[in-house]
Length: 602
Image 1 (cartoon, rainbow, N blue to C red):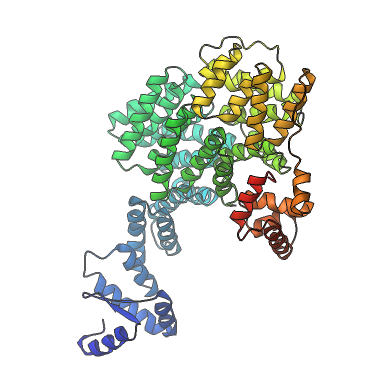
Image 2: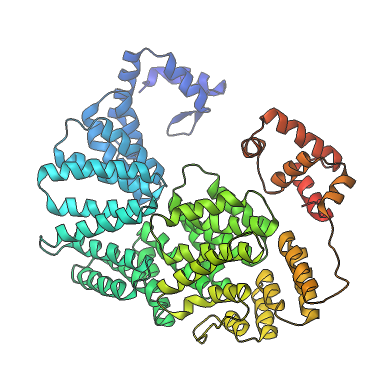
């Protein structure tokens, strides 16, 4: 671009640190210098230089399309933008750079007014798909709606039907189960009027997925079977792995080994074919199946692999969903601080959709109830609101268990909790789901009959038949201290005192207080009162307000989040944090949190 005559000037720029010489080209050492110089150019000069750069770079087939798009936009060469921006988006998607893909689709749509209707519809559909992968599901709904209007104007029933299937998926991710069912049914109804094709196979698989999520096993297997048959006939491994995922996740309740195999096959196909969204979904369902069976080691491995895969491929939606499941696992394993940190990464992001938030809400609700955190109530209410748009078992079961725990502690309505447990059991496809629910019902109604227990997870079965020693030992081997302590509560005085010690060590203060009350009611004497937080706080010289700040510091809140949580100014929070650090003789927030835990302040 500069010509041979400019060699001396380029050397001077390199010598003064403005440019770097890479042998076959030059680059600005700092982006800020490039931007400053570019801004100093007149608009006409900037367009001229970018046009020259575009022409030169197009001579080199190795140059990334994204670079060409940049120069085409800056040169206002709209024909080249319309040609190359969609290609750059597809390239970015293929390598897992989905945020970049969204950006390129937005560039393409900005200049799409002159394109034919079908090309504009394709851009909106691509934009919608990429948006949903990075968690911008509302934007995905809007773009897919635009595409649907264009397909209707064309009279293209197949593309319109495929768009309805996408709208079904996006609506589900936004927590609107009713709209998801409606769009999904409309998609199949429209596509069945056209010759069999991949769009119909995927629409069947989408309905199979919705049925699986509602625990309607017969519908899942019937619709999934249709999708599998059509996908194999059309040689579409991407649709095949999607359908196998549904069939495997539902089949776990009928034949666990076969369900596992179907899910493993789905994951293998997705990974080998680079079907990124399907792979993320397969990792998620594989992990959740292991969690359902209390196979914590297998679930942990799958979650680590799945989250890593999603981070590598920019799949924010599935990454954050799996983080919530991981937080629930960490709660089970007694790693409560780690669980809170993981869950807050999801919940504190205002852009996270309701569906993706839910697993993290479950983890936080359990933590806050067990720690006596007054901020548990808004979390529980958010869980309740989610159920208003669709009563799915996978969300009803944890909500029923949370409400049962509140009722057991005397902080909730026992009748409501028992009603929710009965409702969940009425929706469950098999008694294998009932273990945790039946255990909580036994705590609320000690004389209740669990009925048939053979298909339940082993520690729950042992508890329900009265073998508390074996149940507690099994929970211990699994590394689940809270559940172990609940099993020990069924035992003799020594076991109950051991349970109390476990609850104290976990920091489950309200639970420990409740257990003391139960022990006194049963005539057990000389029960340690337990350290009083107020006394310890006074010894440290902390005011009640400073204690509240300390608790939020320990949970990983920033000053800005503490201010929003407590409805006070950030400056006031700064003063409180400084006072807390000083009184605890800590030099950092982490050190203050560690000191607070060690001394029992939190």
